[in-house]
Image (cartoon, rainbow, N blue to C red; front, side):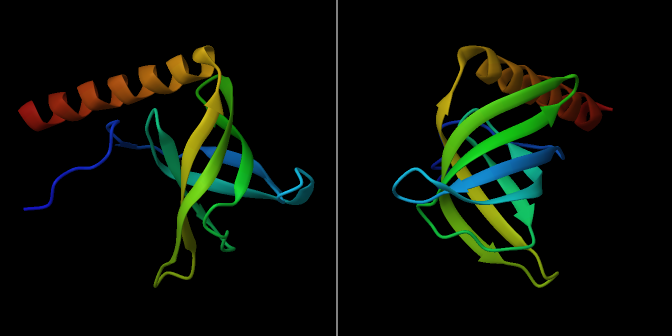
Length: 120
């Protein structure tokens, strides 16, 4: 049986994300748009049209309800899908307490909704 290694629960969530990709010297080298497939307090899973190298540094802006969440993160993995997209896992490296609280509230709300649907 596989053991869950994640520290934070993930929930399915689709949000619009803009990102800036930085090189090792801290210079922005690319910008793009993506959408989340899931979110957690530790990071997000993105679906996008291009690969990003593992270890790449990103600045992210994500629309969540009426909020814009800003975070910095590192690419943990990048995988091509049969549907022709890239799934890119991003681990947060910097996020404010307020933005983290927005994500935590969303995760909790979605978990409650999921449990309610399963109980019905």
